Image (cartoon, rainbow, N blue to C red; front, top):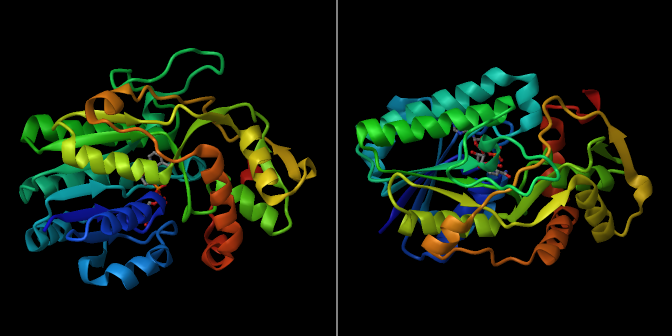
Length: 336
Ligand SMILES: NC(=O)c1ccc[n+]([C@@H]2O[C@H](COP(=O)([O-])OP(=O)(O)OC[C@H]3O[C@@H](n4cnc5c(N)ncnc54)[C@H](O)[C@@H]3O)[C@@H](O)[C@H]2O)c1
């Protein structure tokens, strides 16, 4: 029986990954290790507990606690560690950068050390397109795995430093590592500080969506299920020491995202308002994901237009999930 030790599994992508993996494999086991920060939410895993409780274990803890993770590795003997745990909100990183370097850099290093000490057979690290810096809106470039790291915000600088630490543990200590750097994800169970659920929840609570003035800035969007399939493939077929970019090629600017949300909810443009950009707001990220496509045979399977509507409707239909989270939102986007 394959055992995964997933960190940050109570967050957006981690909880989707746990659901995906346990429902795909009938003989796998997952240990979910999560600190339950404001962004961690066990309500996102209620159905997992109910449907797969015999193959799923939750442990509350910090990735910085290397003694605890080492003991857990020795007890559970995981075949794979998959590290999702991070502070993940760019805006919050401007208000409290220290927490980002502490968790994303020091936390990752402590987890790597525990994994090396326990001789974990594989450490997969979840990273982001944002480590490569940003692109001009009219650029015809995209970021490959060979592109230089040029992070510009505390969040993406901390993620970049974590990637370097992962590679260092691979080269220096022989830890079998792989990395994946993914584009912006969307889907259910995303904390309502991130743009899609944030805008939807604004509208559903009778408020306007605050768009940054640079609303032509754009992102590459991938449904979280396609990200989960990519991670799974890298675990199974990825080469040790390698990094894989994971992107859809589908770019949408913030204005378009807002309009698609209005359309899905049958609302009009009067529900948009414009606020100052947060400092360091990156213009654009676009990944060249040909490596994972040609070497591992991955490609996105989810239709963007339909899954975007479904995502908006999921938030509309799951108020009981997001309502308790509103008081935990840390940043006021209108206040830069
Ligand atoms: N959301 C995206 O679009 C996106 C895109 C590319 C990469 N990523 C990366 O994917 C990973 C997951 O992102 P997400 O959007 O699900 O984030 P999230 O903020 O929703 O979840 C993060 C989870 O990590 C946990 N956590 C935080 N600090 C911890 C610590 N010290 N110890 C243990 N657990 C801790 C939180 O409780 C939470 O459950 C992150 O590493 C992020 O950088 C995200």
